Every structure is written in C-alpha cells, then in structure tokens.
Image (cartoon, rainbow, N blue to C red; front, side):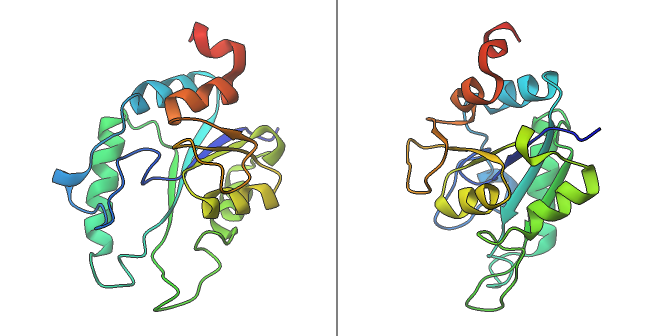
Length: 174
C-alpha cells in the first residue's frame, strides 16, 4: 500500500535561512514550532522527507561534510524523525542537474524508493521553486512565510501553522 509523505524544504522551513548559507552548526537554528510540527506529522503516520538545494557545495562555499554535520544536528534536534534527506549540491552557475529544484528528480526518487502516493502527500516550501516540482507530480502544497509566489494550494506562516492544512481537524488533538 502506498505511503503518505510530507516533503520539506530545509532552509526557511525547518531552520532559519541566511543569505550567507547555513552550513555551520553554530548558525543552524530551528524555526520556532518545528519540533512540535514534526512530531505531530509523524504521529499522523506520514513519512518525512527533506528535499533541499545545497548550491553552496557547487560554489565551493562549504563541503558535503559541512552539510552532513548540520543534517546530523537537525536529526538530533528533531528526535531522528526525518526518514530521509535528499539534497542537490548543484548550482546553474557551475553545473546543471535535474535534481535541483525546480527540477523534480529528488521527489521522483523518493516516490519510487518509499512507495509514496503523491495524492496523499504534501510539500512545504518557502519559495516557488519548492512548490512547482511538487505540483507537477500531484503533491499538495503549502508555501510558508506568508508568500504565495509559487501558486501553492495553501499559504501558512510557518511549518507549525502549515499543519492545520496537512493534518486538518486531527491537528488540535495530537
């Protein structure tokens, strides 16, 4: 039986974003309400998969190891509730890739690997490039930060309030 999943962008959805990139543990800061939202999403039976562009690797600003250290910290802070992390270490100024959002390859890999039903799944992102590949695949979408430049199905302030759309009436009872 196909599974339901909540796909999450990392920077700007799980942790505070920075124009100078987030790749050091001392600058990795969870957004308020994220641990509670992640716990509720898992309790409702969803897989949680992160799909994140990490262009700083291609640009030589940080290494894959730097990113992995931040991902290990994120998993620790979130009780190891994230089922898998897909990342695209590319940037169009250096190399092209279908993995990089708005490409949909990271989503397609997850759908195939974990037997995910796109129609029962959600993507939460903070930019249009997060929303567009999910919509292409029939995944429900929520854009956070109160923006709607991606034509998302729903708009929310943050991941915590996005749970109102994802979990519906059960959200208040978890």
